[in-house]
Every structure is written in structure tokens, then in C-alpha cells.
Image 1 (tube, rainbow, N blue to C red):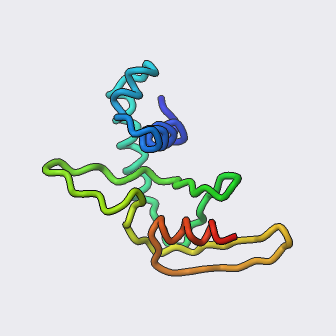
Image 2 (cartoon, helix red, strand yellow):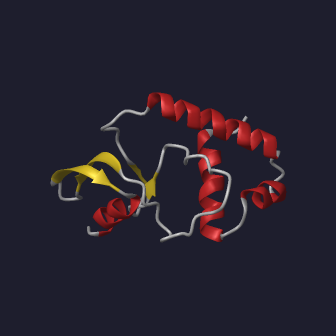
Length: 122
């Protein structure tokens, strides 16, 4: 069994280091079928329980951590990348509390790039 965190860690590592998931799995002795079975299971759970207004997890330093599995890749010709950040918009509610205790709430349709800009602005 692979946990949701392990699956997301593999995805994050591969994206940051520009290596394929299959190469990572082979190097770490993780069976490919096990990885893809659990990834699909978590993605299906996410699709069934998706609800607007859910909270966004941040790592220390303000790095965004998506609790959801990324969407499945489609087969066929690859589309050209327009940037390194996902351009999919989602309706989000972001609540921020500063070290001084000030709180703010930002709501609306945002991409990962928007969210990154909000977090970095601090």
C-alpha cells in the first residue's frame, strides 16, 4: 500500500527533478502497478469528495501542497506547455493569518500561479 503522501511525493520529486515517474519507481524499488493502482484510487476518492471552499495546505515557507491527486494524463499528442505552473482554475477560499495575528480571506477563481503569487507576497 502506498499512502496519498507517498504518491504526491513521487509526483512532486519527478516534477522538480525532471525525471519520469517510471524511472523514479524503478530506482526506489516501487512496483509500477502498485503506484498506479493507488494513484487512481486516490484520484477517484478526490473526484467523489471534491467540495468548494476546502482549505489549502501550506508547507513551512509558504509552499503550496495540493491534497488532491493531479488529473490523469490523456493519451494522444502532447500539448505544448505554456508555463511550468498549472493553469487550471479552481474556485478557492484562502484564509491567511500573519505572525502578528492579522487575518484575511481571499475568494475566487484562481490558478496555482495566482495562489503562488498570494503566498509569495507576504
